[in-house]
Image 1 (tube, rainbow, N blue to C red):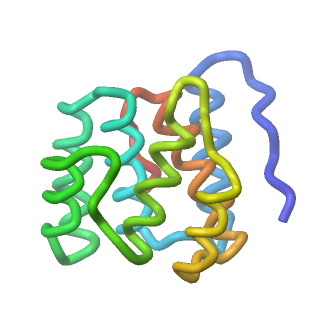
Image 2 (cartoon, one colour):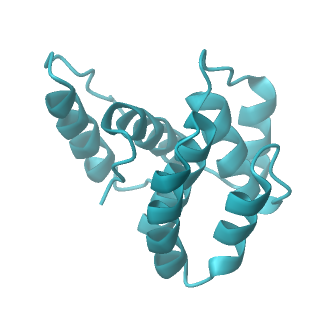
Length: 138
């Protein structure tokens, strides 16, 4: 899959390009997982208001508020395991300044069954979230 690199100089143009790329990624994360990744990215950035707002949407889309509540309450390192734990950890690594994603994150994602298209989606959602100050990908 070829991910278009944003060429527009305004932040809103970059966000629109990233969101369009994520939406076209048919094999990507589901909407609940995208919202959950946005929560993790907002928490890593220290934007607790955005994390709370995004968390309500993530809980609704995931149909389970427990992982969202646990992530918001405990922060990082996240006590979550499995697929959502791997997504939260990778989102935190990608959203750190500077980004510190490494082989351990990729290994954990793969072990949790996250596909390469879903990993690309994770990167796009974190990037859009960072540029937009908490705007989730819909």
